[in-house]
Structures are given as structure tokens and as C-alpha cells.
Image 1: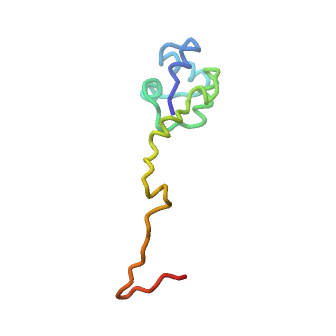
Image 2 (image 1 turned 30 degrees about the vertical axis):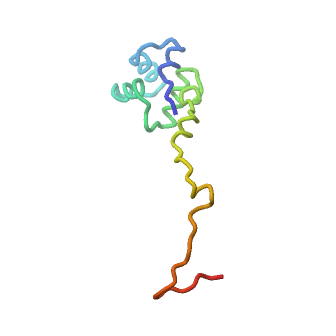
Image 3 (image 1 turned 60 degrees about the horizontal axis):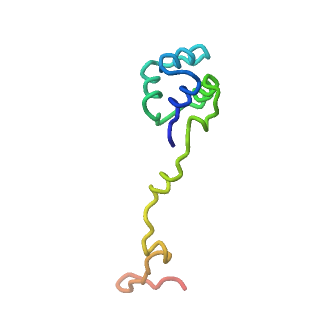
Length: 105
């Protein structure tokens, strides 16, 4: 996911985090300067849905405008397929010997 807060804020004519913080307070969401700085400068790792609702209301947008999916990054994280994965896994041969029984048929 890509966090798009600053772009949405700029589209709404909000250029400073302090201005957005004031508008959020007017809408009933009091947040600390540190939390606002985190939202403004980095992608938050957690986000309360109630806060997202107020933020979208203030900016006049939808959650999908703030959280942009990046499927190419998800695809890049997938492990590479090995030969075992394409053939259905490694070949298993039972080891018979002491204290081992034959597998069920």
C-alpha cells in the first residue's frame, strides 16, 4: 500500500500538517503533533478506522484515495517458483528399516 495523504491534502488546498491537524480538531479528532507528523511524513503501520473516517470527511475523499494498492509490489514479494513447486513437491521414498512400517496402501 502507498500512503497518499500529502497529495490528497494538497488537492484540498492544505499545504501544512498543522493546518490539517486544526481541521481534524474542528471535526472532532484531536491528535498529537507527533501522530500528525507521522501521518504526514511516513506511511502509518496502523490506523484506526474511526480516524480514517474523520480524515476522509475533512479531505472530502474516500479511503481508496488515501490508500493506494500496489499489486506489483505484492507480486515482487512472492518467492520464486522452484522445480519442486512446479512438479508438486519433492519425490518421497519410504525408508524401511528398524522400527519403520510400510506406508498405508
